[in-house]
Image 1 (spheres, one colour):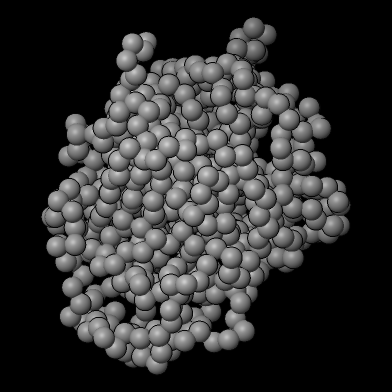
Image 2 (spheres, helix red, strand yellow):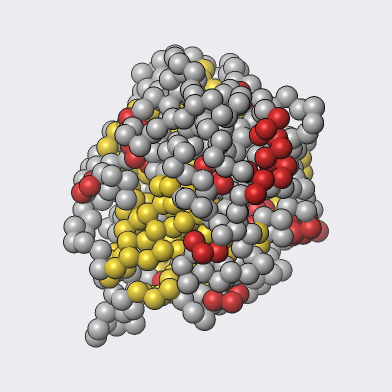
Length: 621
């Protein structure tokens, strides 16, 4: 069994990890650790440890170095910080001054982006945008006042280094009393590891987009699809199982750098209120989180406190964070983080009895995409057409009945209630083989129609009430964005000054991804410009069949989710396939900020833009 370090706030000894071992070693004439001396490279036989230590402010040193990494039977070239994957937990306190010093021991440029942190743009860590990057052997220090609290993380913004292990957690303790009461905490940093180099993965995706899909449909598969449905998908040359670009068996899914074979344990004492800080630090994986037999109360989203909401499962997109409170009784509970395509699972045992194994649930049947995911909304809200769930239930004939969801409040529905079979969806009015999947007349003039745009959503619907692919018909409570309410609304109540619409575009076959049909390389000199303190309502329209986690650097936005003055703040939003999502943003953080899809290979392929916020008049720059 692998034991996690104890994150209990009542245990100060866990903070005794030395902030700069290199500096202490120099003063004491002791040998420096390999990761601090530049002798960690995989060619030198250095090994990166699983798991993470802790460093605390105000002065923090991070050393980036590569080495060999192993989890279970999978081993390969990794990039860690301070000798571990993930990198160390950085613990800061609101109201203090932080000095985060990064030392690049790699043989290539690197960087660190402080994901979700409010700080001057020149310290945000995006090479070519906010700073030049950190050259081999170089250093960079981010100095800023800590003016927030919550759960965040950091990662590389250079090439594909993030996929190799260049990431770690950040916890900022509040200056005053924490509104969330708990006795113990555990960080749950979700990620994946591949022994295939990420540039090789990218090459294979460009050559054959479905290369890593091990769940394709075939003539004699056991997917519960009618002949009519199979013919429809075949005519459109699309695959209803095209859920994830990369998945198991290419990936080993990990919690805190440990794969399932490591038997990671997270200790607790019976009756404690345990805070689980979930961070999705993966490159490409949406995870569905559940602890069978143990309800979870969501208390924070993307570092922002929300009104407590009890659920049994939630989906976490890449770059999102959720904090939950659980109060387990004596025993061992299975913490299961199942990949959205259900090809694999990250695992840990939440236990009061060390050594006692948890009974993890089996992988559920893969979900299937639906017509709603292709942008044919209006038939159902949130994909309740019998095609989103596991177990392949409800995939029979689609011409028997219609279902009107226009008057339903899906934010309050038990998405798993399966007392009555759901009526099948009526496509009798559609010739699916002749349907226009690329009707350019539906696009605004701002979209550049080219070979990189192979699909256009005909009728994209707002799906804030959708819990995520495969979770709309499970027999328990599942979180969705409409259930999130800010704990203490502090947003700007004035109406938006203007509105704008951005389209998420792509060509899945050619693996081309962009905003408004324009790759980042072609718009780097044409940023999205905003006046200082301008409030803008932004509508994101997903013209693709994949869910995209869209992240805005440096600025929190409010989800337009029907919560009124309690709209929750986030830094990342999942835009469901063939659908739309809307947020309000007040652009009061001047500078140039990255705005991109957090699916790493999508961003690398061009799904990124620059948000340029003007400085206030007479401001010091």
